Amino acid sequence: MRSFVTLLCGALAIGAAQAGGGTYVKLPGGEFSSVLNYEDSSSRVRVAPFGLMSLPVTNADFLGFVRAHPQWRRDAAPGVFAESRYLSHWAGPTQLGPNALPRQPVVWVSWFAASAYCKAQGAQLPTWSQWEYAAAADERRTDARSDPAWRERILDWYAQSSKPALPSVGLQRPNAYGVRDLHGLVWEWTDDFSALLVSADNRDQGDPDRLKFCGAGALAIKDRDNYAVLMRLAMLSSLEGADATANLGFRCAR
Amino acid sequence: MRHPLAAPLLLALAIVAQAAAATPTPLPRDSIYQLAAPLVDQGGRHLMLADKRGRAQVVVMFYTSCTLVCPTIIDTLLDLDRKLAPEERQRLGVLMVTLDAQRDNPAALKAVADKRSLDLGRWTLAQPQPTDVRAIAGLLGVRYRQLANGEFNHTSLLLLLDRDGRIVARSSKTSGLVDAQFIGRVRGVLAQP
Image 1 (cartoon, each protein chain N blue to C red):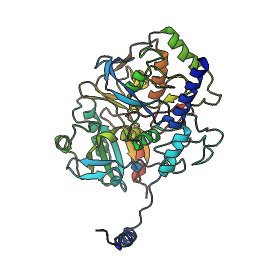
Image 2: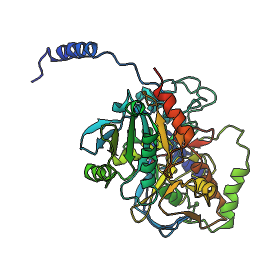
Image 3: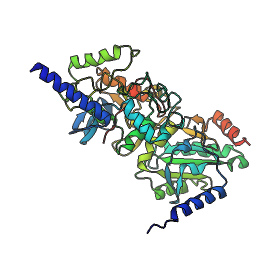
Image 4: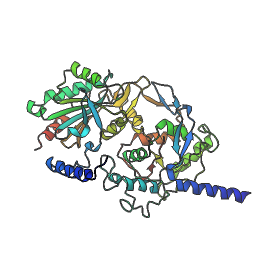
């Protein structure tokens, strides 16, 4: 019996491997309590039903995209869309090489490049709310966020050095929705990353001279113990659209 | 229906047309005009972002129903205009792109232009496609979020583009008086041969 289960899991893993990040899982959506608490609205957000890639986009997936859309090769993409380190870990413009294995999540991609990839699929990057909603789940529960053990597990990942090579996608068990690797592998772009005004808000508090913001709607963090999500927020709010980093990848939603 | 000669003929015409138009130099890779973003201006005219190539621009993002900071963004731009010499002013365009691409149609943009007596020979108030707003803001480094009541919370920035659409300076001072250093950068760009 046990070996049968192992075998089955192996078969599933292979199935997922062949599909790459391209398989979309349906998420039911609904009322969701966001960690973000904007003063203009309640932290209860409505998430409409949506599909989310079960895995992050891999190097192999992204290579296919770059071959089909050569304007996104690292030697062709305009600097305004992708900084100089874009895909710099690949052996060549259309070659993965030893530092970019086919099954590793693609990293060193800008928001513009990630958006273009999703657009080519008839999809888009998930919004922050969609990502937060999907990532609230653990293997059994759709919202595991109040469980200290769940939080510990994610923090353990953050505590690890980012030096060792990135693992392949799909090695972790799927969450309750059937989505994998939302935690524990890479950071992920969201479509509305530049709506997160966290760092700027703090920087300009009480500085009337700069009048950086038009309108109200200051952001407060409701659940300050949820570091797993807060660290994502801090990271995303510090990025520009052309930025790329060694630990930042993406998946698409539709 | 398809004429056997149609394809070669079209190709020949295309080659002739391309030769006739003085072959434009390709855009620099660090030009924001790389983004193929269709816009509609306050007069209902369609244009591409890249149509602003050839004249230095000061670009801002705003929205018309904004009552707090956006009026001071326009004040700041008018202050810049006032501080430039007439011959400098003539060589500078001002491009205001709305964040509220759903509601800020040409009529709404025109109303603001009229109310503030903006020189529409040099100023363009533009409505992008709703799906392009995040990308345009991304190129400019503007962060924003739509509030529950339809207003926007956004960083306000003046960006100076050279004639090829490269960002050469930015200023977050938009409270009515333009930053002196920024004027210096504008003059520098306008003085380029």
